[in-house]
Image (cartoon, rainbow, N blue to C red; front, side, top):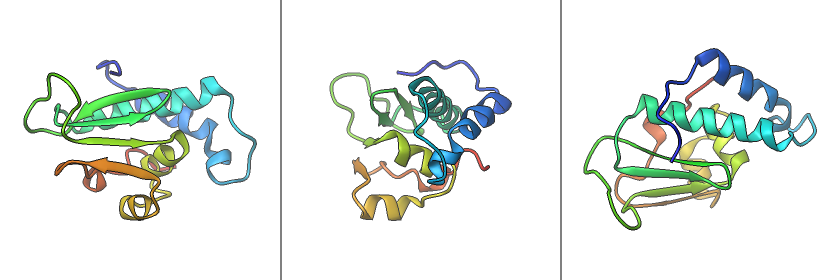
Length: 126
């Protein structure tokens, strides 16, 4: 799981701006450390904004966080899991892609009755 340390909004914004050209389809693929920073900071921001342990959000290979208030998950596979790739996550996190559209297109897998992040996205706007 990602760190619970508070995210500096300026650090989040800088990390996401570093990959924004790529997200718009106007820039080269970002370096792995840049992409990792944008994913990790935006996921930690989600967890900070929606504290809890009911939903696990996974963006392999970079990070996973637990968030959303409700029953605490402690062992085994969580009942509410969301998984997506780094590009899709960052598009969701920045508001470039809507939750329902991402799920309908199969870009996000979401299982469980609480596995819906639409109320908490985007976490940053550019």
